[in-house]
Amino acid sequence: MSLIPDDVIEQVREAADIVGIIGEHVELKRTGADYRAPCPFHGGTHRNFAVIPRKGMFYCFVCHAGGDVFTFFMKKLGMDYPTAVREVARRAGITIPERGPTGPDPREPLYSAVAAAADWFARQLRESPEAQVARDYLTTRHLDLETVQPLGLGYAPRSKAFLDAMKGLGVRDEVLLEAGLLARREDGTLAPRFRGRLLFPIHDVRARVVGFGGRILGEGEPKYLNSPDTPIFHKGKLLYNLHVAKHAMRKAERAILVEGYFDALRLSLAGIEEVVAPLGTGLTPEQAQLVKRHAPHVILLYDSDEPGLRATFRAGDELLREGLRVSVATLPAGEDPDTLGQKKGAAGIEEILNDAVDVLERKIQILDRKGFFGTLPGRRRALDRLLPTIRAAKDPITRELYIARAAEAAGVRKDVLEREALGAGSGEQYRAAQQGNRSPLPAPALPANAEKALVLLMLEGEPWKSRVVEAVDPEELEFPPYRAVFESVADDAVLALDDTSARAYEQLKAEGLGRRDPNEMYELALNWMEARRLERQLEQLDDQLPFESPERQASLIAEKRRVFDELRKRYPRYKIAKRRRGAPGT
Ligand SMILES: [Zn+2]
Image (cartoon, rainbow, N blue to C red; front, side, top):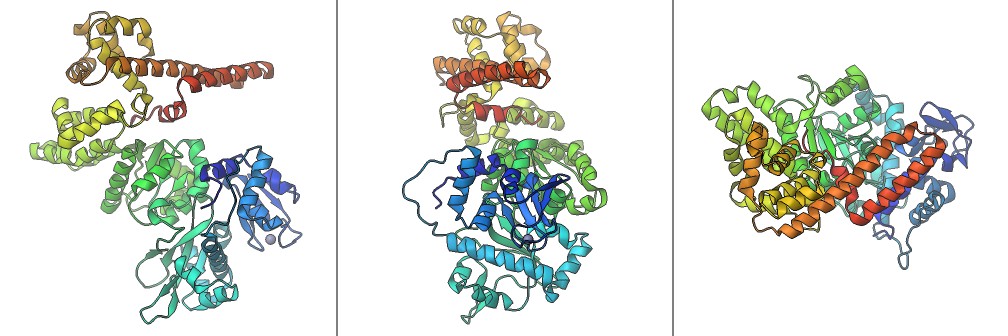
């Protein structure tokens, strides 16, 4: 295990000024979004060395040295990885806690072996006569070598040349076996795992190559072959391109999930950076969690044929289970993201993404088009298809909205569908999720949940009704049906409610407080409402900031700091709450 925690390394990388740091060693000139200089590694005089701040990486088109800001220090100044991280941290003003005696990561030989292999495969793709088949293949996909080189694509020859090359570099067979680059045959001899394949390097979040995905060129099975699971490569826990995409995901507040390496590569080349792909299998819960760490919203961009749709909805359910907002973008028939990107470029892809609809809505569209809602048995089957998605929605408000929408589409009563959706066994889970009894404050992290708690208390009658009305202004409730119920109960005018709010009222009445402690609920809900008030204040300050004079900005920033500190004190989970804002599948 490395002694510097992953999240600290990420923080350092994000804070690092890669242009400033590399600029101390070479004279960088801006060209478009990138910077160019003579290469400090091979000592050239032409500007073949590129620094790409958007991707946080550098690459030389002549000697092919490349990597991130840490790799730069390692290659230029001969530092080891932890020293490089500490040096970059020092410059970015980040303190890395010292954690006992430092020692080498026992997996270090595996990382080195895979890195050496990646360099060698990349060189084969550029230079080896045998790799002409790979270069030709790239041409058929309208990709030139120059474009894919910085991404580290490689070629694994059919021969055993890989074995000799690694031996020449002093990499031991046992290490290559453990790294999944060699396989032992039944007769005991060793053979390269990848042969006659175009290789996509797969990186961990630290941007180290940990494995490969290989596409067969010519005849053979399987079409795609990945590295086997090793101590550093876990297929179900990595996402292709995440090391690059995570920055863009944070900025765009969305992730685009595609099926294949070429799809991800095409979108990334088109300038849509927030794209990731699972490694040739269905999306796993761990991968959904990885996405969630960087973005609150996912757009699924898979093929629109039957298998593509099945994969779409399976991935959608997995993401809903993590509480993410999920949309589906629909490609024209016969296109995949790669072909569409080739034909229409970024604008064409952006257009498709803009038309993305919520995942449940997409299911309803498809069922409707197939005529499911026209007959009674059809409606029943349609509901059976919708129920898994409804049940997957972990976010309680999304789930309520889904139940309402599915009930409307299938023409059934909402309460009937609700009972079925919660089903035997899952009801307890749902209740637990709503009450949030796993950690101190998970459920009230949602505004409408605090709002719901307040309305439930009011429905208990006095003294709760007066206490709530005194403490909270109905204007502060953001979920319209709850606001309407709040107002009508406060005014004793329940009969004036419109249909939607009346149903919400009846539902809340039926739900009641159950075994929940009203005092505790009241505390938590008020706490949340207050935090939300402060959060709104912060949002207003943010909106104001860009238009003010520098002096005024300074005082606004001081004010922001004060509000933020107060918020942190009162509501330590504020950040999580903020990220989840707007999570309901709108
Ligand atoms: Zn160079």
